[in-house]
Length: 366
Image (cartoon, rainbow, N blue to C red; front, side):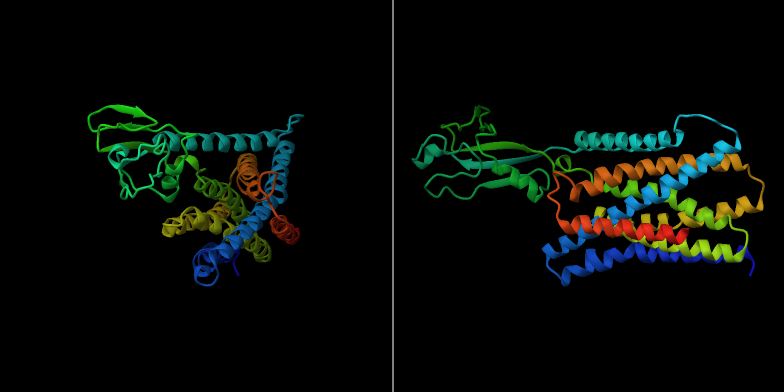
């Protein structure tokens, strides 16, 4: 069979395989398990799968991106007789790392500045009208006198999450509440005795400000893996005979199947209310290897400068490695492994299993 036809077949198979393995976590874990196991067990399963994914990404970083990218760059240096002692490829990795760090800093700052405060208005009865004026009984929100004062009315200017409502339970030792009466008088840590009711205005920090935008992690992984899988497809497209195409395709399909499953887990976790959006991004990821195959077909059928190809390949591999370095250690594994993670044996074990799987895939590649 003509190698060109074989490459086209592998192109279609890679798309289907990536989509199948990418959506599998949604049906097996994030959706299907809700009716099969308890929420606590489901969280355990997802945590262990995250650890496995962390080991897979660690193996991809150490065994694929760093080694393959440095080999291509050394080949480029030899081809142009470039002799420098500075590890330039490691600089590319550092650039990718700090680009992601600044990007996440920018995203956190943007979320902190743009997310509006949630303001709640609470009408509570005047203690003077109840006959019980014990000092400090309204020092904290939600505290009531011994007599039945009626239920407090809470008006939300925005829809509040459960986390935001819990913020109202802060004690008077840590918070000072400013109350404004109907006549405009302001009283701190107390109430105006001349009005029948007072209105407490409380600003609650939005939940999006207090939480790390975990969705960023999934999209950073998407970008890094897209770079990586383009070069996987490129390896298929550059082969010149049928047997070599099938051999390289077999190794890459195993590798990409594992990666697609782990990426799908992260994507669907980042979009729990809009799984269709995660599926769209998985479709985008599925097209990356075929793009690499197409580039490889173009390179083998045309005249393209090998020096430019090797330089661009090594730079992009280095940037992808920097992204992997940041996400794997500072976003993923640190949640389950480390001093502040309260990790357990199985967290480390499943991370090790993920790394071993990628080591076996590397062995198959060789």
